[in-house]
Length: 596
Image (cartoon, rainbow, N blue to C red; front, side):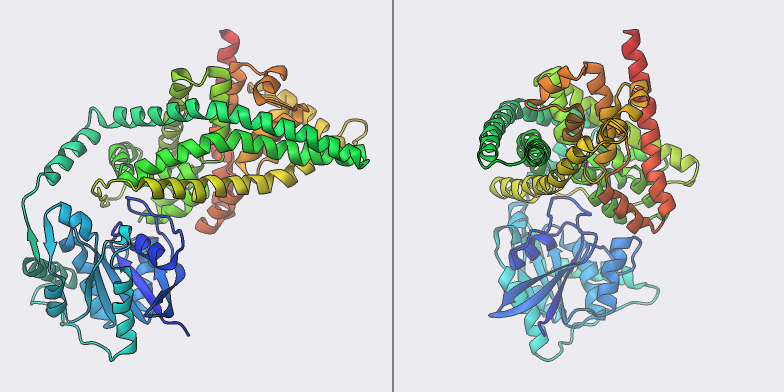
């Protein structure tokens, strides 16, 4: 059996980075806490032999207060690994050492890895790993995992504890009147005095000044909206031409494929199913989704790698507190921008069960990557790809955030009453983004993976919708019957039957809602002219975008909510609550459009 090494440590000390570097996997990393909320395993090699690495959620103590901390504590307390490797933050060793001392008190086969030594050096911090090793009686190695330095040495140190006799770490002295936590913090101070020297630099003062600007009461939120507006402006400007080019290429390829099918005397019904159903929906998904995602996700990942997302959470903390929710919910909102299912799972970082439920039930209000391409495309088609379109996108994000706060307030005053709990929010140091890795990670792990998922769902859905559109039901087809049935309801809310059917049939994935809507119109070719031909106006586009923000989550998110809450009742509420408010706001927009 391969030996198992558990990677432990505080949040945001580089556990997942070391894990990725050793295993070759792509566990999500970022310059903020709360990314790892479950155990992740992978295989690495040390001294020429395979070892199993387990990436454990970050925690500050083995006395857990949240779900992900409980997973970490159980993994250590129950001795599920053959050896443990505790990752320490070289820039803040005193904060990292108490957890290491707790682990050493329970598991003797534990090695320490002082990570982020490159950043510590830039800050004028020098750490004597040999002095730490001598004082603690266990192996201590230094590393800079982002650049790959020290990873193999750290694994070798942990592996040596498995192969050799059980070490005898220096015992933790608990003085009269102390608890274990107090003793750990006192001992951490003594070890830092022994092993850490610091030379004066201006970096800390510069970072403090930047943080005072980014998290200031007056400029914090305006700067956040301004940065978001810049990201959307670049996305809209950059995605317009490639999207049109892709659509033209798919149209030309479609004509060639139709001729090929005609040449082999393919039956008309099969040709329609393949070309108008499978190919048409898939081509629309790719041309609509790929260009904006290829621009937006690298830009957003750069902000994430820089360490800006925790500053956003800090800026929004008071807003969530006034709604009697937890400020950590701001971090789960940021996770929801990638995927609402991931955001729901990320709610494990919230300690209070009540506040965790509030965050879970409102996460779908955050526009995920499946909805962003449609929102960006409609902004470009109906409002232009310049400042107006970018401003509208910022307004939509601000609206989604306001709805998250509003629904959190409503839940906290009704079915989930209670007061907000206290928590600790760590502001990590700003780090120079690794541009190359960011681009590769955002393109491979986000853009292409999401596109592949969308195409995988779009192709069979396109075929099903085509069949529904051509199977008769007492005259009209099943799809036509559904659209006619929903049309009066849809028009009451500024939409129509084709749009509502697109949302209903797009339950498997938000990415396919707009292509399915086009199929409901029987439209082919470029998206903009097709929507205008179907009678869309700016008010129709606005209602579609608002309902896209406020409607039932996709099937993956609903199943994740059921798994996290263990209740179909909460899952039903998570679907009904945003949908009701989405229809109400669409009704207001429709009445406003009529008046104007």
